[in-house]
Image (spheres, rainbow, N blue to C red):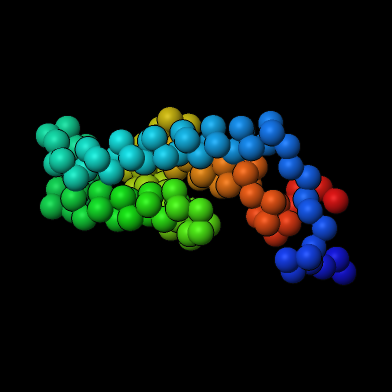
Length: 140
């Protein structure tokens, strides 16, 4: 059985400038999209209400969902709580996936969009953080 050493004195996991750039690029896409999404919900724009109605969600939930997304975004951006933010984003993305599945929306453009965002969010952290690469190793 293989164990993963999470102690502070564990051997460093490889890191490079390219990994850091890739991580920040993926995280940047996630941050930009979620900042946009939270903002339009908090501003209560008409097209957000229309989209909520098409998704069969009550429009009075637009602002609370936007606030939840904003809180998760702040947690994701702050390095000490970035993993918690990614976990909470994963829950939000799961809800979006379930909503689109329920309505039988197109698979690759609508339903799996939450999967794409989740991969970007977690991929960004994985490339940037050696501690996360120790916990989630893809090679030995």
